[in-house]
Length: 58
Length: 192
Image (tube, rainbow over all chains, first blue to last red; front, side):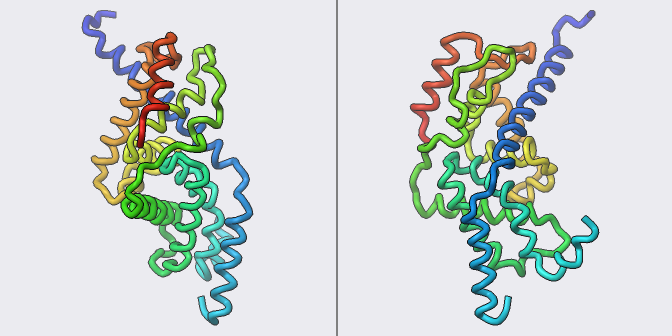
């Protein structure tokens, strides 16, 4: 390699770093996505639906 | 996907349930606290339900829901005027084992670093880096310019690198006890 200032190497490292950061972000996020949704949310949606039907319109 | 269309046209509210896991993940990234996150999701669902007319069928419902959720977060925050703490751990402590030395960044370390970012950087990174939003979608969700999202993402990544003191060859590893101490100190001292 003729590169003296190492800028290309620096760029490579930067993008590899970004990839790793994004991979970790996805893992953090994915972990949460895979959790079961607590029943309270499904119950909430049911309640909202029921309220609407009582009011005769949605 | 195709065959679900008629029902969705009939009532887009039916679609909300599909986005619950993503809403919870996004909420956690904002609040950094599991129970606060679920309260936030609950409020957002109620708002979304009542304002379903403002959702344009055929557009990105997840982005619409995320917008409601983050608006709720920031307006609650303004009202409460209090600093949110990572009281029950959530992202930070779900995996609080000691750092691994297999050359990969331990999740716990990453999460500890992540919660130290500011709100804007966290949400930009979660939207773009984790949930697969385009810069444009993220910009719309956050109500800012595309360039603003890009710079938040870049600064967020940069900050993560700094906190974790990632070394130049791309391996994410805490190099020494000093680094570890800094990361840990950051967690206990920092108030958001």
